[in-house]
Length: 127
Image 1: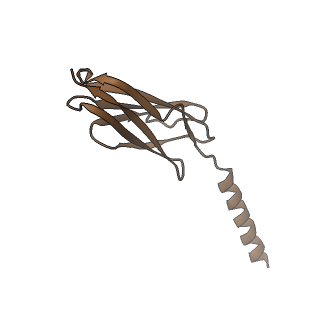
Image 2: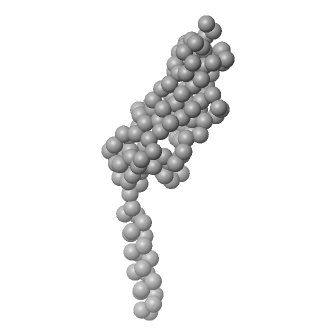
Image 3: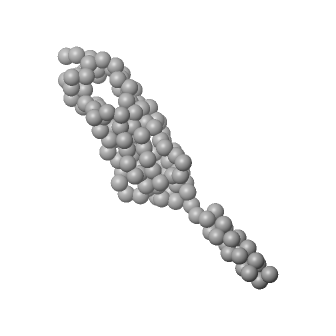
């Protein structure tokens, strides 16, 4: 009987500990950026996606994957504390890419079961 009571107590404490742990959460100001019509001659079009950690644990960006080599991401490398902002900068190379584009960047973080998708779009015009 004492063993069962001890096991139940240990189970209760471990569940309480896990539920007390914080969880990070990213809230983006926007998830889509439309460049509109841009000239090929600019070379690179860049935009920033600002987000806030609305959770109660540090948010860590593990990686940002893009849909092609013409799109390059950079992002905040340090953990983003609760209530603080971070940013992801996405650059699109316009050289030799005349026409409409719609590209994605997938953000992988330490938030369980969450993947964030950022979209850039626009139209590159010839010189």
